[in-house]
Length: 349
Ligand code: TXA
Ligand code: MG
Image (tube, rainbow, N blue to C red):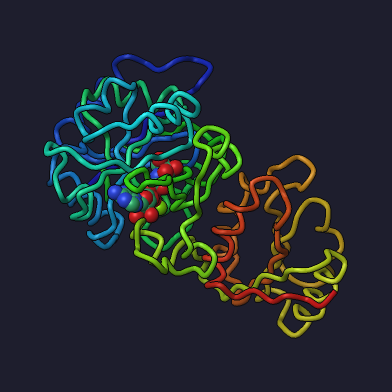
């Protein structure tokens, strides 16, 4: 399959004929990758079972891992879900459009292929104006997982999508680098108390201010979804670079010293170090990549690109600083721990 490319310049608005063309591909069962404010999504018609199956095939994703339906306005929600609670309304008022996905009971129009056989459905209204324009023009809810091959880091720029999916999907819309860089916060609203299934840019504190109470899925701590695998995607190895990665937790001075000592045991070109702007110059041996700055809160934005870059460099081991305590650290550390296959070393104080 030849993949078609179009380019979105946010300053220019979205060309009507290109938007119509992309929307027509979606409506008729094709796949279009598009930017959102979190990561790039791989879109297909959320009401067509064949589209869902194409998405699984293109990503190499197990088909029991459900997809998120993307809508462009509140009125599109009612067709795809059952009951909408007062709590759900309050969360939508507070955070939509934006990086928050809500899990509801599904309605009958949503095929089981889209929800991986579950009787619930995840729905999100993205903040990205182009994404919303595309969904609105398509006239159907758009099922969209992150636009990466299964197991690879989510794409934060169109080049990452091309790397993984060129030749496997109908179209890639290049809208430049995304704003946030980590996937949306997922909240399950089908229980008495809302449950955070996946941490994201919308933090636990922000949610609590709206709902009063919220609990974290206990499995998030251990890396396993202990109680029940509510977000089935969370059980698969994810966001993974090819190299074996270890994260060091402790005082930053000790972390730098430990990483320098460990890196010295490997050839210069085989060892990767994941650092920040503030520490990059303190490493003496190895391929140093910067996720972002602790000062400017840019770590979430640069994390996935750095993990992909390590693959290109061909390193065999990666040593990473911990980013605990930084802005959005709950979400960042959730992704980093997964990328490291839960390999964390705690340095003594
Ligand atoms: O920011 C995002 O959410 C991005 C952009 C493209 O919108 N999308 C995204 O989709 O991250 P994906 O498929 O990579 O991750 C969706 C996660 C998976 O872990 C999946 O298991 C979970 O959402 N999920 C989907 N439907 C669910 C449901 N009904 N119940 C529980 N978890 C669900
Ligand atoms: Mg994903």
